[in-house]
Length: 304
Image 1: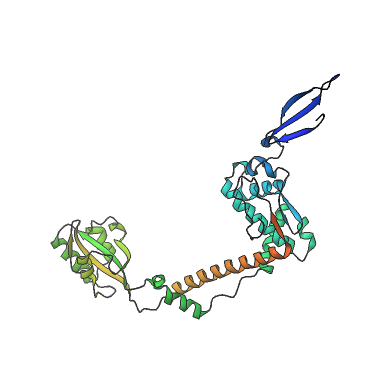
Image 2: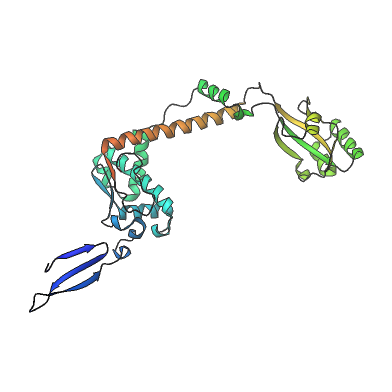
């Protein structure tokens, strides 16, 4: 037993021989806590990774110090002030950069300075994982056919209203607008709607969203038409239809471009993800998440 060192968790028990005898005395020594290990980020990642290495990508270690610096740069504040969730997300982003650099055709890329590494990783993403072709007209049409809500689905009307104190005033307002007077001017002068000074705009309304008496008042009105006065608890309403889209209407050019952009972004994200997983499998990625105090995982699958 003499001179033998036993380690159990954070306690080190030294068994020392007693001078001039065979009996030994025990001395219990408390090892330093993890946060005194001298690593600025050790408290955030846990004692079991205090050796300094979190992952290996393409044979290159990814260290605590490297993650600490990356988090500080990306978050704009010291790593110790960053939440575990954000640290975990930035750890995965750092691994993506490391995969791209490891897959680079230029071996020297891995030795670049930190700021230059991130810029180079963006260039490599564009060259190694380019976005797919833009969606075709047929793909946009197919999306719109399957998602009728993208262009309003069924009948929709764009409305604005006047809210008047009594039926007589409502009829006067209606007649003035029908005679060609500017709706906004009449609204500012007579309406009691909350947004009367801005023209009383209600915006786009789908069929069935309005109370039945309002639905009946605007049913069949063409753009520009003005309804008969309709009573409610708030007063008397006069509506004007500004635009109308029917269920069979083709979506306008702006809507088609929004759908095209949405499809392109989704396809690019999927393609980049598939590409990164393939590159990670090629260069080799191993992550050691044991004891990490932030959400730690291998974003490419595999180990762990």
